[in-house]
Amino acid sequence: MLADAETVDPMELTRLGVDAAKKQHFERGLILLSEAYRIFSLEREVTSEAVRDASWENEPEARRRAPGVTFSYYGLCLACTTSTRAVEAAKFCEIAIQKEPTRAEHYVNLARIWQVGRKRQKMVQALDRGLAELPRSTPLIALRREVGIRGTPPLSFLPRSSKLNTTIGKILRRRPKG
Image (tube, rainbow, N blue to C red; front, top):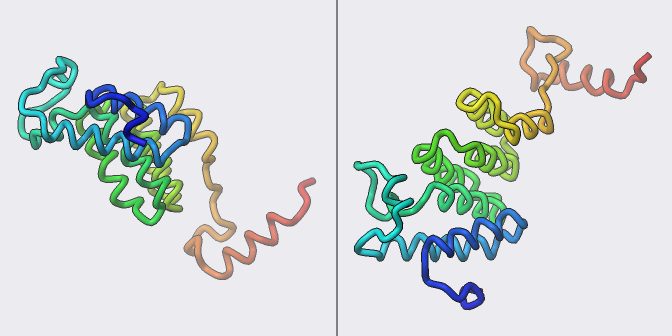
């Protein structure tokens, strides 16, 4: 799989890994992005000016060299190949958000990670966090609309998970509107 890439440049491997993830080839993306990170951690001197400009002083050397998209899409690929590792995958997206807080795709990837991990509340929180940072972001707004907003439970003074609320909710959902 790595031989197909025909490169050892970590920036090119990152680009190929991100492209694979965007095409939903998550296994390939995971391999390419982990190799890119491995090379970033081995490099003695940062050769890419873009990587130098995007880093901050107190972060580990390999993390400083790798661009935010490496972490963001690595987390997405990890979650989509192994949904039980959503918490670990989300940590990678958080690193990307720390590096580039004004990049909407990191918040979208974090929301997708929580979606794969079946954590709806955290998915909505990630989207809301992204929209607080970037209120006019088209991808964030579109995903937030796709996810939808929960209505209030039938008996709002009881927890959403109470037997009474779930039973009444099911009855109300089945009832024809009119």
